[in-house]
Structure formats: C-alpha cells, structure tokens
Length: 324
Image (cartoon, rainbow, N blue to C red; front, side, top):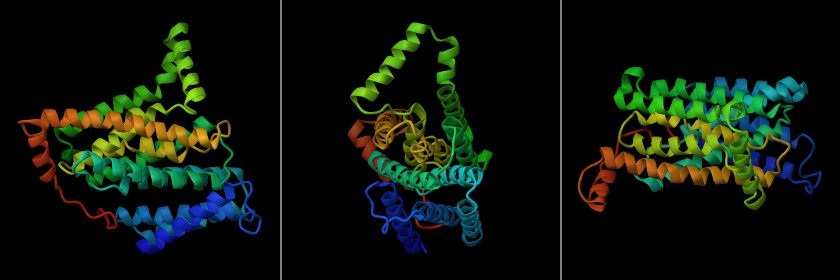
C-alpha cells in the first residue's frame, strides 16, 4: 500500500504544480486538474495518517474522498474552504507522524526536512481547493486543528500523562509558553509596545523582505522547527520526545498554509518557509547541545557524545509501519 500511496502522491503533486504554471497547455492541465489533485492528496494523506497511527485507512480514506468530491462538485465556497483547512491540518500532522527517532543531529535535520516536504505537498492541495479565506483566520483554524490532532495522537504515543515525567512536564510547559508568547507577539506589540520599538521591528521586517525576499515566520522558526528537531532527537532516547514533536505542527502547519495568502508571491512564500527552517535548525542545534551538556554522558565532548549517540536506540516502528 505504501508504494501505491507514494505513486498517487507524486502524480497528484505533478498535476497540482502543472496547474499552477500559467503557461501550461490546456490539454495538460484542464480546469478540473487542480481540484482533482487536491482531492487525491487529501484522500492519500488521510489514508496514510490513519495507517501510520493505527486507525482504519479504508473508512477514513473513503470519508475524505467523499467530502473532497462534495466540496469540488457542489462548488460551495464554505465547503471548499473547509476542505482546504482540513487538508492543511492533516498534512501538518502527517508530516510530524512520518518522522522516526534521530540518534544524532544530522538525522534530526533529515526528519525535519521530510516533515516540511509533506507539509509543502499539502500546501499545493490547499491551493487546489481554491478556498475563499481570511488569511489570519484560516491559519489559526488550521493550526488549532493540527495542534489538537497532534496532542490527541501523542497522548497515546507518549503513554498518556503519566508517561510525561518531570522532564516531559517541563517540556510541555515551556512549549506552551513559547507558543502563547509567539502567537501574542504582534498583539502585545500593538497594545503595549512603544512607537519607536514597533517601527524599528517593522523596519527589520521590511528590510528582510526587500533585501532577502522574505521574512521567516516566528512561530515556525522559534517553536515549530526547534521542537521537531529536538523532539526527534529526544525520541531516540526517551518517549517524552513525542510531546515535543507535537509542537512541531507549528512548523508544518505554517508550511501547509503558506500559499493561501494572495498578497505575497510564490517566491516569497517559499523563501519565508526556507528561512524559517534555517533559523529553526540553528536554534534546534543549540538546544540539543545544551540538552546533551546537561543530561548526556560526562567527559570530553567528542569522546562523550559519540557513545551517547550509539546507545540512543529507543525502539519505534519503522517509517512505513503503524506506530500503534
């Protein structure tokens, strides 16, 4: 089944990309091509997520197919927008669930990039539904659904609340604080920031967009990517790493919703996600090094970390198998 899902994803992705190219010939990308690709991705991702998390792929895949077809055939803006939001959330959660434990930082980078790639395919499907959106509301709704879904699954994968331990509780509390602070960042600046501070920060954003082509999303670079990288790294050692990975949907949901804003170009949307990944990987690297310095084996740095990575072999099912 994994091969069939992979082939269907590649085909649907190619169709969606072709539908986004203005110069594509009509015979190659008919008017319904984008909708067909979006429904295919929604169905395939739902089947993959259900299979990965021990659910019922046929039941949920059939439901996703029926809802996707209804949204397309009935041509109702509310249905198409709802399908787009749901697809965005499913892609964000699937991106996190496809990861495996990462004994070393380079493995964690690989898992992060894979999760973001899954979310990027979801972003194409979101656009394929042609939703009519208020961008901020769409992003918040998709992120809320993804975060709720991730925590429901992680509750089972992390052995419930009793599996948290002191370390897990600390991780969840810190993650929640960072998430709340990041989401309230703009509002706090607007209400309580001085005019000079707000203008200096806006000048930095404008400079980044003009000189670098984009500005990274704070929730992705400060929370999502570091949490995903550190979580995959921790999962090779402790099951509490799953609770960290749940916050990784802050990155994958941002990537999956990156193309819905009609006010920014495709290039800027892509660069914004890429810059967020780069900044997040740097933060994640520093956090992992701090974690190893506080909890890893003692001794000289090179000699201590190599054995620590070799014994970080906490078992988990392989990528293509069910986690539960």
